[in-house]
Length: 368
Image 1 (cartoon, helix red, strand yellow):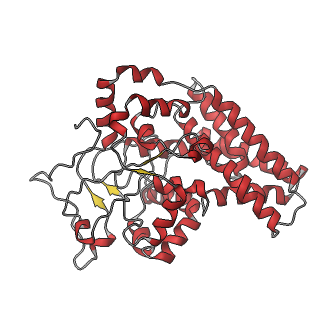
Image 2 (cartoon, rainbow, N blue to C red; image 1 turned 60 degrees about the vertical axis):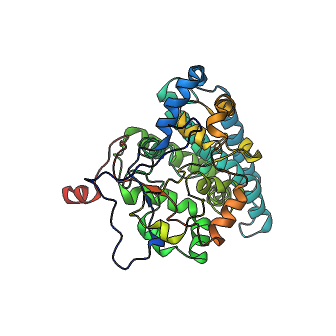
Image 3 (tube, helix red, strand yellow; image 1 turned 120 degrees about the horizontal axis):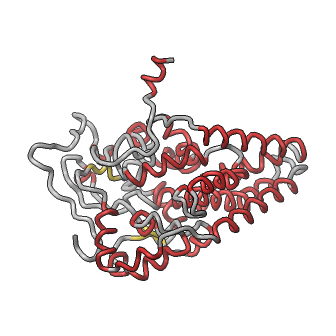
């Protein structure tokens, strides 16, 4: 592998061929198909060989639990302060957008961090603490998020396993300015519902506890505050995944923003495009450095506080890679640029590994 960390896309083996495009279909609607290994494992091995001391950065970050407790407390206080404020008032929505969405996006990414066992040494302590971070989000999701997200890491770009990938239906029907604006506005719903439409993970006791704890918290909020207090938290979660500056990270992380002509998008071509982009701007302060996404995928066992050290230590690998300078511009260009859309993702048919097991929808329905 080149020392600059660039991934090389090899030609298709003679006994294999890329998924054929439908006859008469516009190649603009297809994804970038490849048979190469995802780039992060390759780069990780190269970096460890060049900088073996980088492995010392692995391990939990004690600061995480204090940040989470602070943000959870802030959201509960704000929810109680807004309990008598009308839902359809500018004050309610302004607070929810500026403070609530920022706080809940922070908690989304705290759960992301905790899913990698980076808050405590004990895996069980991480799973239980993720439920605490989940409380101001209003709906239980931390237990289900973990296996889907770890599969995303183990199966980056693998069709049918990586639920971060848009489906072909999404890419086709939302291929317009209005469609992409709709996607960005309701992005949080796509991320919440898409995984269940692709495959279902077994419902474990951890998920039952997650649901029970969240429902108990919501009930207490309704009893001792008001319905508006709970609505504030749910609205904050929705806005956190909508047209909000921090929501730009969802798109910035893996959508291909290189300029590629429609003819080059034909799936019969093997296109060397980057699969992950990093962002090194100030919004990382609010999002557990999730912008350092190449670094995170290369070393998912290194916590957010030490990801900048990964970049500095292996700068020769990361400096040449394409990056984003603004999450706001990422959203703007995603909506308005005809060369960027939901189909701008690298997909592979093979490889990867499922974390946590899955239940086939059709089989489960027949058995039921």
